[in-house]
Length: 539
Image: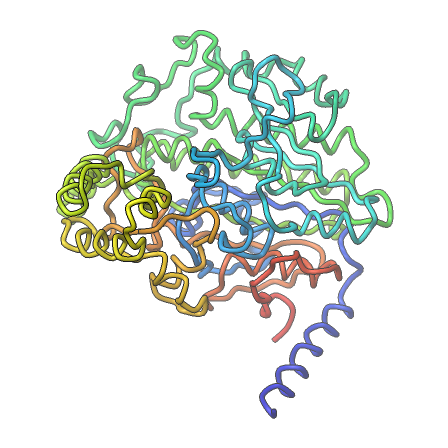
């Protein structure tokens, strides 16, 4: 009883402290950097300029130990978790793609054939947030203001725009078939004039005539490995090292996403949005969500220790500085609040680590599935027992098992025992085990539990040894695990209502949305399970 009383007093003290702060911001800007490690702020930090990342870190609050608390650490669940304040178990976005047993097919997180593309003739706009099963902080802002707030979300990736925008915001993303920004009839029937005018500037075509070279003398990039490391993947099969002469690539609008120019274009769209809309001009807080995706494409190709990635962050630093300057001009210093984080981090390239005598390797998923199928056929008879394999999860054919009168849990246990002996596999769990695991568990099993969705997850799930990735990937490296190299991301807060400071206490990414709810004095997102970032508001 006494503990409950003390907690109540502490909570009320924090809430009172919030009320005593400045009036709530006129505009919130949520910045998500796709595939950003926390350590990039430190490893590249001495070369950042004063107005970008340094401004956020020196004048804002830095949480140095922010983590994802579930598996898998992918782009779509990352964005969904930041904005809903909960994990895939609740919000339902269990991956970029997942297998949907009731539909008997793989689905994409934001695909929606009920809607059409606005802004091009492609089908890249057939998207909506309808697979998101919880409200976002942007939804709650709209509900609180009864749709008088303005919510705008933008990204190179459709999922990076759709999910943060929630169910009632506007969302725009890059169509790599034409090099323009588009949307969906879910949101509107026609692009706003300011987006159409932005597209008419033809920035993508102009960047395709440029060369990506390092900002500084390449020999000064001492925080990275040598250029053209043998473990890296070549860009578009044409480029192996700097400089990247994009004029050699004719009308490949998609390649822009694999260069810092993709981030440049998105930052320009942000500036155009501020110039052409009245954000922060009335009594209702507005929200802009922006997700920088080019860093993810480059990171997959080149890995976290490449010059490409270092140069990309030095250039992104310039983008952040330009955005903050525009916010000062259009909204005013002290009138806006910014948070910056990432949707996941990334593993080092296994081959790079092997070359440097670290014990990592590759796992051949499809070869293993083939061998497992043969073992199952020997025990249970010839059949396609494994209906699908994705996201390190195996889906069994439940209808077939019932027809053959085979217990689902029995086969799942048999598969788990088999996988336990497979080289490269560190953890294996069945759905039955995960369903009984408390969400409060902080070990790997707890991460699986928080990522497990009863309608969308598989019957058996597994995790590799640290540093291992699936050999079937087309990328040099990837992300998705529950290890620190994938879970540890930056968390910066700056602006209205934010004091200066830093914390090394461990927090979860799901704590962002509840903190915003308290900052804005609005309702928590419907499925929120995160806590407050208490140190942001008081001692």
